Length: 263
Image 1 (cartoon, helix red, strand yellow):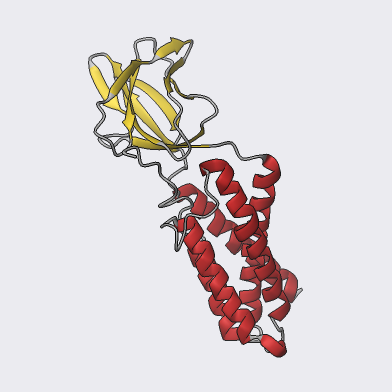
Image 2 (tube, rainbow, N blue to C red; image 1 turned 180 degrees about the vertical axis):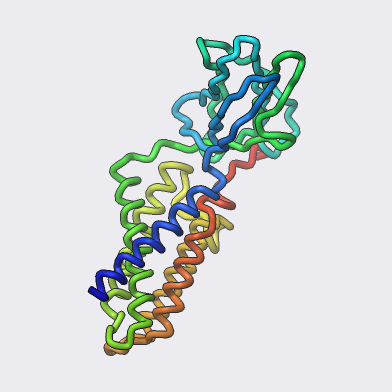
């Protein structure tokens, strides 16, 4: 019963970290509600898109008196804003963002007008969307699953380190194996499909996802070394578990691959 409760706690902590990471990341859609001249609407504006096709930006605006336009420019350039009137199809207003090369970004705004009132759905700041190549499900799904399991076993190992009747060594080994497969085999393959590069962390770049994977792996290798010859190394395991939980709570894709249009 005690072990079952610890596994349940590990699952809850891991899910909480994963959800927090996802919802606070720079690729999570911008969602909200707006009211313009008495017309209430909700919206969901993407911040990530595959570059196989152009990206459609669409919102539901039932009021026939509501019109809109899309303004966009290449991110971190001196380009002028391009304006596109949104087309109405029933209750929907839509316009197209042109696809970009892998890691290319566009800054865009959706501006609605009704009854002489005009409003940007994102306020004064534009939304930034990043384009990426298509990643096969055969790579993406195992990567996500294995990284989740690595976080789960890491958290469970940390809880085991707090229990003096349980040696966390086996859980630590499983964590290291999962983290290596998910973060250093499948991860780089996935990134190459998406952005054309296998590794953009230290020493080749500043990609935060790569670097936090490297930090977590280093912490767990240190815990394994400290626990050689069957030692529990509880302090090391607990520290590695906390480090992994913390680094993977950092928003995903923060400081990720970004195309330099000046080149």
